[in-house]
Every structure is written in structure tokens, then in C-alpha cells.
Image (cartoon, rainbow, N blue to C red; front, side, top):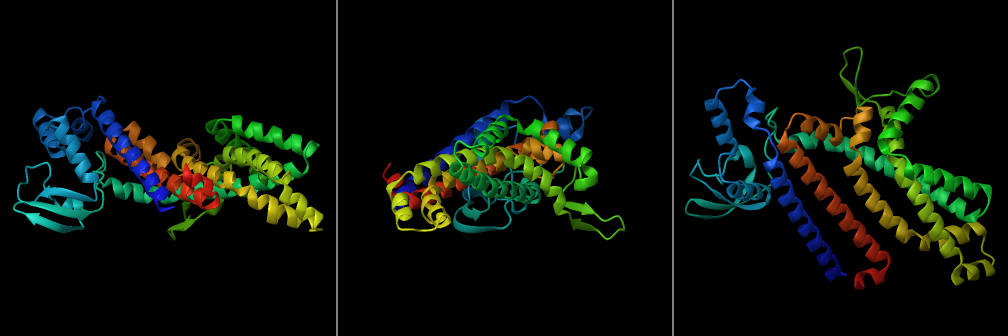
Length: 359
């Protein structure tokens, strides 16, 4: 099992290394001058050169890449005395950090990854992500819980009612849910539940987790604004989990141990929950982990439609303003989340099915 875990960690690190290389070179060959964006198109060339020097964009691309990787690594090499060095150890960038080893003017330090600063606001990218990601995580987890509970329930009922009108209706709904694009579904659900049926649902078409009190008492949490985005985001995994649960249940119900349990006189609900459903969980768990990772990365359109202030809105806003450090940092952060979730899913799947560990 330990060898299996280390192999999955190695695969994840290789994927992350590939993403870092692609993201850096992609956003460094795109047109656009960050100094012009920060100072305005009518800024003089001297001011532009000063900003580009401060950002390190006047150095060779290879040096810029090494500096970028050095900033990302938790254990990295830095210069302590040469302020002109691209590897200069600045407390403004890396605070807090711990010096592990010093040799002459060079130091090996332990620090948190540095994702640079926003071109527009000059805030650290980690601060921007830190304020936006919790809302995306809440949205994705809520959507996934909704998809798992409803999808597994529908799948079990569909398997037990095979070839009835309930099974056929479930199939139609699942196919529809998998085929409708998230962006279109978000607009349709917002229009239906927050406009046409607004007098019944009392839901808002747009809204964030935090709302401003009309009487000047500050912000308060408005959980009802979470309902429509979570419903929209959960439709596609719900449809997939419904069919996956149904197929797994049908396979489990045809096994000898289920027939033996029925022959022993166990109650039907006991046979379903304790025997069939328990052994049908493995593919459902694997798919749920993959979908949760996908929801964290793919909530951009849903958040944008419902004006949910998460990572999606941050990324779209940064792209519109050519704020490359925010976009690059957000992509890398989401990539790390995907790798961690997939790693945990593989470990859990390996624990549930020992055959996986031998692959």
C-alpha cells in the first residue's frame, strides 16, 4: 500500500511540474505589457522600464523561469545581500520564512510558495485566492453532496424498479442532465426559479454568500443564495452518479452473496443497504472524487452567471484585465487541489479494492 501511495504522489508531482512549465511559458509569450497596464497607455518609457525591472521582466526568459520556480518551491535558494539579484531574499515577498542553511551570501530557506502580486491591485495573489477559494469550495462541496445524495438514491430506486416507468423516467432525466451545458443550465435555472417562480421560491437571481444589511449593520451570511448555484453545478455529476449507481447495483444484485442473503430471509432493505449497495460503492466513490475536483475547476461559468464571488469570478476578472499573476496563481492553485483530491480518491479506492494497488 505504501508503494502504491508513493507512486501516486510521484505521478502528481510530475503533472504539477508539467503544468508549471506550460503556465509560465504560455503567459510569458502572450501579448501585453504589464507596466503599461499598471501605469496607463500614456506613461513615459522611463517609468515603464522601472516597473518592468521591478517585475523582473527585463531579464532573460530562462532566468525568469528559474526565479518563478524558486518562488514556488517551499525549500528554495536565495541571495541575502544582493538586492539586484533575481533570487534576492526579500522579507516583503517571503515573510514569514525560516533559514535552514547559510553559506556566504546564499541561504536555503523554508517558506510558503510565493505566487507574485497582482498587476492591478498589487495585492499578493495568495491573499486574493485566500479570499475567493472558500466560497468556491463551499459551492463545490454543497453541489457534490446534493449530487451524491440524490444521485445515489435515484440510482438505487432505478435499479430496484428496472424496466418500469420510474427507470425510464430516470434515464431520460439523467441523459438530459448530462447533455445540458452548465452555462445554459445556469441561465435557465436562474430565470425559472428566481424570476418566473420568484414569488414562490423567494430566491435571488444574483447574490453572494455575504450580503450587506440594509440598516448599516454590516455583512451577514445569506445561505439561500447558495441554492441555485449548487443546484446548477450539481446537475451533471448527479446524472452521472445516477446511472453509475444503477449499473453497479444491478451487477451487485445479480451476485451469489445477494441471493444467499435473500435465501436466509433477510429483509429487502437490509439486503439492499448492507450487501448490494455496500459492494457497489467503489465506482461511485471514484467518480465522486473526480467530479468534486472537476467542480472546483469548472465552476467558472456558474459563478459568473450567479455573481458568486469565488475563483471563477476572480479568474474571469483577471483575464479581462490581463492580470497574469492572478490567472497563473489561480491555475496552479486549482491544479494542486485537483492533484490532492485525485490522490486521496486513488488511495481510498485502493483501500476499498486491493486489486487496484497491484496495477
